[in-house]
Length: 130
Image (cartoon, rainbow, N blue to C red; front, side, top):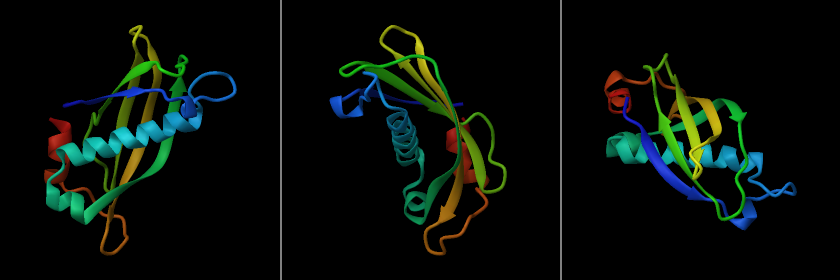
């Protein structure tokens, strides 16, 4: 399965009162990296006609990241969609080589014109599966 990677540096506004990246920021990063992966791989016509919404997040917080620290985000889709939905995996690794956050997020495909859920066509999923 082809993985997509991105590098993120924690900004001061990402930090909570405990001195590390806030949990809500991790959720934003999960979405930002997933959307970037979609636009990097999807056919332009598909990107214009459809968008994705999150229906479920499962997140394991394994370590902390402080302002100025860098993480590498890696995301992949390990298995074909089921109807309108698929699971996307995400891993954030710190500069120390340790996994800071892991997540599995369920996404659903929405047709822009109708606003309705749509079964994911095999040809749309193929570039994400390898």
